[in-house]
Image (tube, rainbow, N blue to C red; front, side):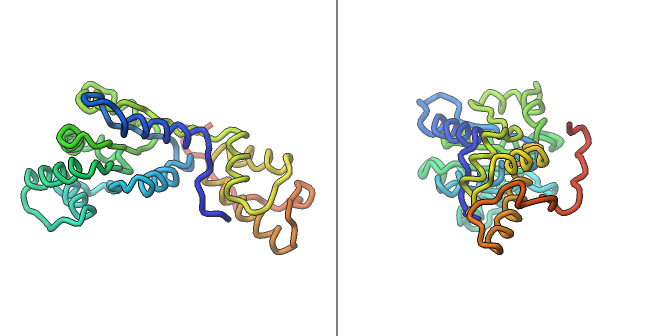
Length: 244
């Protein structure tokens, strides 16, 4: 399997959104919110974008507080530990102002769910003080929570809302061409897309299984007939509550 990011529609939209906030005029909001279901390809795309832009990437956890969040960003920037939250915020903002490195915060649902909203407010402060792009990444539903009156200040800073929807068949074709080192016929690709229900993560798992079989047999191309009744996934994936 090739270690590349497939140019799906969502990835293309993410690129356009990031370019817009990174080249925006002064005074224009510079934050993005990226959201979607598990398996939609968000993490792979964000990791690629953060590496390409020399971004500051942190992943929120359930145990985060405003202080521990800022301490994590300080550590990612190579700074020495600090005691006071205000000192950390000022130092991070100064570093971001000088370098214009974007800040990526994954699992941002934990920030929105924090009781007093202080973590989101700190990120808004960093954006306002540095003018550097900020990208929040979360699950489907975070967009509604951020759009609530409680988070109105952060909501106004978000210029682009990028949804990673389930991949369509065209996206599945792009994924297969990009990451798989053998070809699939149309029938097999269609079956893969249907069984994965558009999940990029599940399709990648199935493509790896197909590629392994093809290489073991010396096949440059795999048809539905060659694949036969082999399962694309081991076991049956239970549906997530509320999932169609």
